[in-house]
Image (cartoon, rainbow, N blue to C red; front, side, top):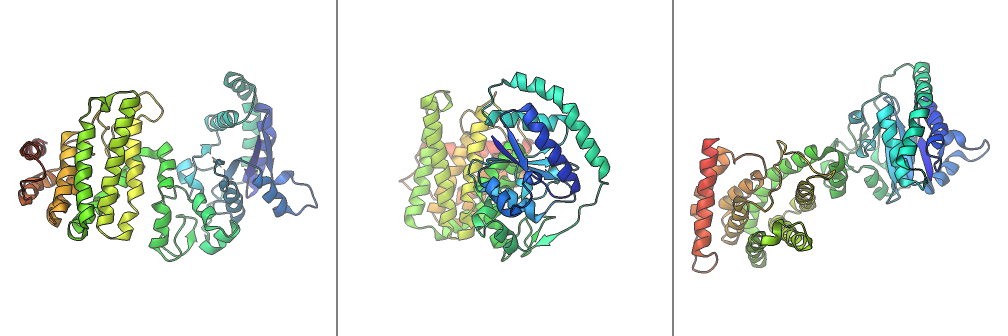
Length: 440
């Protein structure tokens, strides 16, 4: 297994050199290389490019001083071309949370015993080593003091340096990445700290050429959030929920004014389908039938929100739809896997997904669809806001809950459409929501 170790600056260089010699002693199937290893007389950048081309695992040695190094960007970008590439920032003299975008996109490890063991485990998992993890751990325990000593010596040679602010144009970074904007986009996966200035400022991350619109193309990329969910799910879910609260109620109001007849009919049909699927006994079963039922519900829920955003006829709002998919899928899957790595505790951002959707949530979806179908912008906005707030722990806020009865009164009750029992259910759920908010 070929591993490339990227460095910039004296401290990172010494650590990379020590690591490239040490890793094969622990994981024998690993062949580690860094730029120190290339022969004198070769065209340096060409040889590195060739090495990167056939490497699927990269370790980026990050220090306070070298963040934003053009060559590290080049090497990380070359690794990011591979769909299955693994890029691990190694945090030498800074915390993982201090690694700036775009390198902060990847989950890094600290240069300590725990972090290096995580790195070794990952390398062992992806290599063809014949040794068991237990055997690798014994080797690691025996060899770790040698690496620790080498790292200490490297740190003592180079005094701690303050991070130097640097700024590069977006064009120059893209040129370093073969002039392919897709590579820049991959390199910027999970770029949470994004500036709206028309430059790439390594202190804050990747910015758009024309300001916020271009930057939003990176920030709204669902792949950003899928990868970040692996290591900061709470923050991601909070961000997505807050963005939905800021946008979807307005989109719902616009949809009530602008939606086509087919879109209005689709929303009503999907709301009914969600309630039907959630009512099946197998919805909460842990078998193939239950999984199929939940998938039909998730697909209907996603299409509901996609249709709502599209019906508002604002193309920027439509960019939110893939993030809704990411949030819905994560919340359902992680909360059903109670014992797996994806399980989570209820947070201040979102409550655990129940065994089946709550009656209030289902009613709010249907009421929202009816408000759009009847061209009632104010009611649509109220139901949309309540529907998003419902995923947060605890009852609805007093302001949100007390707006529901007024919105419900706006709706016309034609002879066709929801049944008398449906309207009674709507009224019951709204009344209960108001009572719960008043007691809180």
